[in-house]
Image (tube, rainbow, N blue to C red):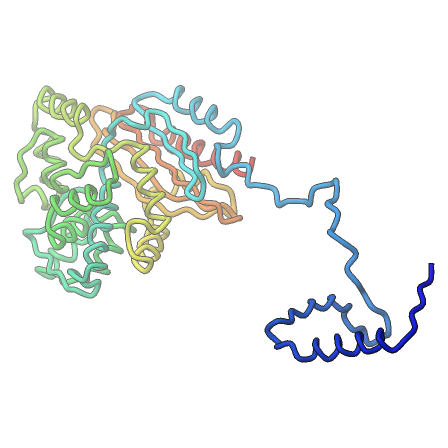
Length: 379
């Protein structure tokens, strides 16, 4: 359909409208947005949007989750139970994945004698004091004949030969952990404030069912049925005094110790403490790295948990061994952190509270526990 117009009136009307539009202020004119222009392509082609993307029917591939992060590998708990059930004596076992969310245990909440495992809490208390600026790793500590203890104390020979020795806190930590030297440990304990300081550290960090005893001399004397005398620290004086006791005294003291160990700890609590230590929850980053490095050089117990791990695994640990009485040992322990070749870490705790099994059988059992962790890793 076509329309035709003619005449000057119409032309004048149109011209007036144009002039009027040009006189309107800019605020009254709202320009329309420009349509988006396709990007320039130097090759001459252009690309233009073609609407909303269409979601594919097949989901995008995702990285597979670690199957062992939230739950223990299938079969591990059963294997741990089998080892625990068939081993003679009172046994506690705990395994916890440090970088995960699970743990398994047998008799995990019962108290077991720690023996020299408790040296770890002394060292952590000292390093906590170092982090707070109350102690320096370079601080010097004198050790004289009055400071000697009993059983394993390589420092005793030096003290007896020289009259006294002076060592740094750093040297005492190395000696107490890697050589399990009782005199080095008691010297650290004395320096940091005694047993109460260690108990305060355990309470402050809410480590749970972990006790700390009265120190090496009083603990071992009480377990044997003796009252401590400093003369027992020389040579085999302690062994001779213990051997002179009636069997009834020895047995009563031993049974009392096992029933309520003043240095008792539960396997589950110790596994949690190792986990928190490895995660950096207990000490500064520097002190955490330092103590884990020291533990990696432990010389005692090479055929306990460590020997059960295959090549490529790393293990750092602390052992403990109690007194024997007629073939039974009140505490034969090993606790530590195992690291798989892929970096996954596990806290492993095996505490033999009271057993008549031979030493080779004890070590074989411990190796079977750590070996099971390695075998089921990644499943």
